[in-house]
Image (cartoon, one colour):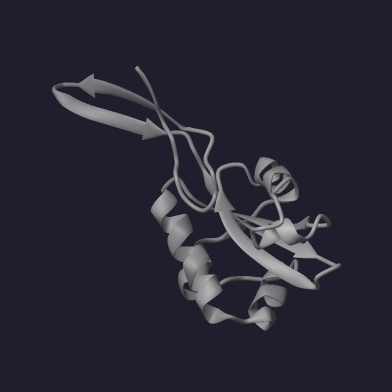
Length: 130
């Protein structure tokens, strides 16, 4: 049986894919979705944006087509600067996204964008996607 759940939130999902089945009386669900943290940069605004998504490349296209009333909708030159694999759990991606945003640190963002960045603490689980 395939289960398709909509993923609400700040980063629209395109449906979590999972296979669910019973084995020896136990319900087992295997999640095939990976969540990512992504970084956008607008040279026009000289600003960064951090988000989470199942598909950061598709999500970038959504940001570029936003109306002017959202943070990323005010500019049309956003580029994807970095993508990090986080977890199969959306909650982990949300936790790390919120942690990064709470730091309010451009310096941290710029360090994370460096190719040699190695996270510590909560950021240790991030794996850069080439």
